[in-house]
Image (cartoon, chains in turn brown, green):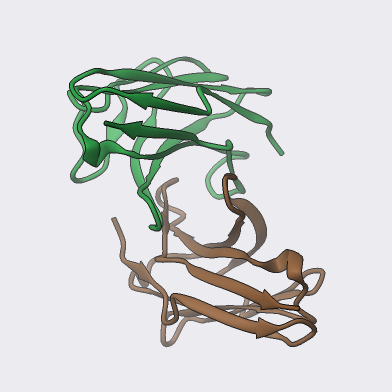
Length: 112
Length: 115
């Protein structure tokens, strides 16, 4: 499958600060991306998605940025809360296939 | 959205045995997938479970080791055969809603420990 990797495997932030989690993908044909949050002992939970015809999408306290030129994806979490502590994964998909391939993951720890 | 139930949620198995994991979805879905998540690692796609036909396996995974069934649009099983400690992982069932691209939902996973 495609190679999707992350720059930072761990990230610690103070409560209230903004968090930025990065992801690099290798398949230039990928055109749909999802960020997932995985809490300990649970399955991944959908956070936000973005299609390749967009470069930014906002949700509640989260923003995803897509830079297709450098094949880079980021997740920004505003006013990070202790409940945001989890592992975050990006996943990529191509419209020609239904399979999703996941990045390495970043473990986010929020310090109260 | 889709609600996905997996059984067992966790198990401890002996080397050389096989275990079948069940995945039940609360609605009919076109695409179902099985992932493996080794300790402290990301998710690796094992195969796409195809309804009424043989599963499509990713590179590095074979049917003899991970036989998959999908008898209908709401149910699938993954068997981990002839287990070794290296098979200790979380196995996750996931479903794709909608046609082509769409949200990928996950079950809570089945945590297998092989002694």
